[in-house]
Amino acid sequence: RLAAINALGVLADPKAAAVLQTFASAAKDSPERKAAESALAAVQAAQKPADELKYLRDEVLNLQKTSRELREEIQTLKKQFEAEHAVTPEQH
Image 1 (tube, rainbow, N blue to C red):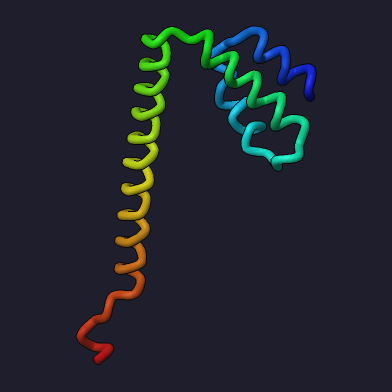
Image 2 (spheres, rainbow, N blue to C red):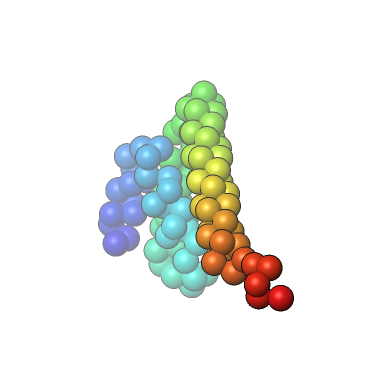
């Protein structure tokens, strides 16, 4: 794993940032964490500001889409719940 993490840092491909971030969030004493933090720093250093902005914009759009889908799903579940637990006049 360490070799793969280090290789991602050498490649400095911005697409590897999400995977490296996962390993960088590992336990503090983890060797993968230290390697991932270094590799992530290399990836970020290699990015041009315009690339970083594009990445952030894409990330925000993905988060907005996910948020919208979750809100729709909650509304659907809420309607199902209300329909199943509706109080009819005969139940009083």
